[in-house]
Amino acid sequence: MKHQLLNSLSKTTVCISFLLLFLHPLSGGATTPLRHIVSFEKGFTQLFGGDSNLLRSDDDNTVHLHLNQYTGAGFRSSDLYNHGVFSARIKLPSEYTAGIVVAFYTSNGDVFEKTHDELDFEFLGNIKGKPWRFQTNLYGNGSTSRGREERYTLWFDPSKAYHRYTIFWTSSKIIFYIDEVPIREILKSDEMGSDFPSKPMALYATIWDASTWATNGGKYKVNYKYAPFVTEMTDLVLHGCISDPIQELLTDNCAQMDKQLETLRYNNITPKQHIAMKRFREKYMYYSYCYDTLRYPIPPPECVIDSALRQRFKESGRLKFEGRHHRHSKKGNHVLSSQVYEIQDQD
Image (tube, rainbow, N blue to C red; front, side, top):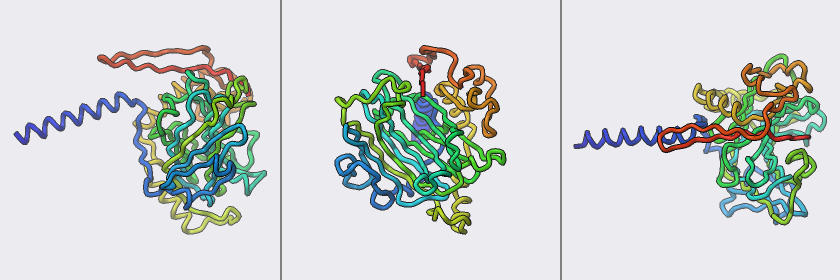
């Protein structure tokens, strides 16, 4: 009887695992270093917005950033880090949010004004009923004229629940994650040189009015009758070597931390995660600088050109097709559908 019960439980576990994999086809394997969650008091300082626009939870683990007709809000980490894992579970504003940018990024622009480094998640507002759009970007050594933007749509509604967004940065690679899905990987090369971020950076989070460009090149602007617009951030992770940005030599502690970062699962994308990343980029990426031959007749050295993807993009780096495309796959009583949208950005 005991053997039959264990066998039944085992089969049930297998069925549940298969169902979860089926319902979440973009699932991956990166784990969150939960022991590195930092409270606001211990790890961050307010940038702007005042007490009414930046609200902290009683346990100091969650921050609400408000945008109204008077101001937005923002905060940054109290320290700069020489490489690390920077992460938060974020819930974006709901309803009509055109023209609003929520940014979660690392930067050292306050210290190195002309030679700054930066790694970005930027969420670009939303018209209700349309998929949320966002971009990732990379700047190294002040290379603002050589932006490395990629733009995508999300496969879920980010205003309905928290999702984890992670920037993983070492001396050899950068990986952007959403939940456990790696969506973009940049490997350092000699040809890339100083364009690869190399100086200590702080973590920033902001919400602000970007009506002039954020949604369809500024066509749709912020409508303050829907204000306040609120984004929530919780379980903030800072895991890296705290560094003096002026100190040029890498300390022994930071060298050891770099080695420790390379042992994290974030550093090694599994075959399953590679499949998930490829699937995401095929279905949801609608602009890539690597395929923008108008800006870059010769692709930047870190670009890995996918011949199948190349066929889908115009010389402007945007998708060739217009409108929306639906793909349906039936499996028993379940129907999976995915949508890819052509967004006519003009910025």
